[in-house]
Length: 286
Image (cartoon, rainbow, N blue to C red; front, side, top):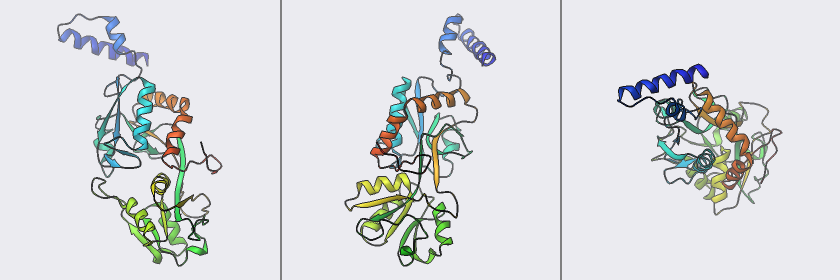
């Protein structure tokens, strides 16, 4: 770190001399006082990479829970907040974080090596959503025989689709697209609408999406995290933030931020209906 600061100080001195200004060691040190200053686009601004139309996570109006978390983190860091918006599809990280248009992706599953992950700040799972009173609200596993003749909504290519295949449920599914442009399509919201209007009997969705839309539905819904699956791919994930692989100091700053504000983070998530799990897969509540 010391050698990197020396190089950065010399570079700053060169810029000042080239501009005709007198070099001041105090000025150089002041501008490098933030450990992250030579890693970030702007050390005075929390620049967040986000999808402009992807509730419950984020949108341009700042209504998603990742928007609210970004506001909390900016306040705690003493920075202003700015966004680089890009549809959450192919090329998202390449065109935002890796293009140095922003410095952090708010929600990334642990183990996704397209970014360097921070420590996780919540743990959740794919979930089954059923109408209360339907007789399916107590279904907790995709092997449950009550699903054999039911119409099941699933996002194509997501991990629970494999579990449906293992349990010979594919003939019963209604498939919704995975890769979309969120500016024009909202298949997960369409799935919940289909459940409300009895076009499907069960919706199987990523937990934060399931909880958010179920909480806002005029039809009482039961959201059950799929934590009992014994076959197929994992359905439970830890979620953290993503930074560039080179940004070690920035990652450490974010890890400290997460540790110091965990309760407030979880209150925001719970307010959006996100089904939070502890390390024993039991529901967490606030």
